[in-house]
Length: 255
Image (cartoon, rainbow, N blue to C red; front, top):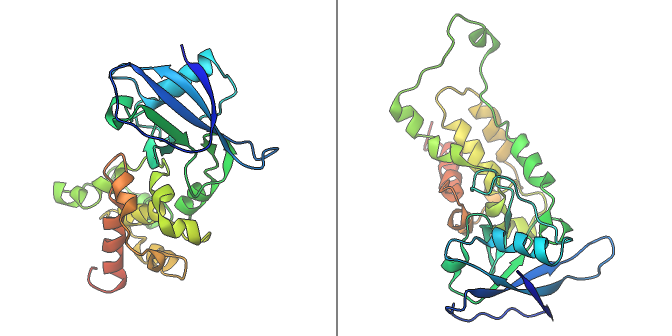
């Protein structure tokens, strides 16, 4: 059972011991009535397979039901439980406490997203920018109304985009992006990587319209190629590489 240890404002970290408990520090903030966030600390038991999400749910079950956290599948598929874990954007259901090698685990809401409460953030900006790049196959109506039921692709054609189709819209890449923090209109690495996913798909004919959407002052040229988006992606999508490949189309190096 989790035990409360008090309130603290500064993160500390020590090597993981064999005590089978960790100090879980949860950021608490309700924008409706709080001026600033504060950390509540809980002593939580764990096993080598215990995830950060399981530790948070242990706190909700045994000590404080009011802790706000978003989660669903618990198997790194839905992308719901993204948060800052010891200073890095991660999926809580995919991050084992034993892998963090620390007796102190600090969880905070993701950067670059408005906070709903505690660890839950609003995803409207991510969904709006994702929708902006037209995340679907674009074909002529005459081609869609035909006797053919499939648009077949070779393995080589699938290989061009399949890596980027693994995006689960968890928001970790946008949270890690330094440009997202300074430009509220930047389309973001998630949307740019998905733009490449469809531009590189041989079945799609919307390349020109998508390239026009991202070729503006708050589009692809605002990316400074920090690469932090690719470092935190739990699915290996590599948004930074997708952005560079998109630039190849805009600069005429790819067709």
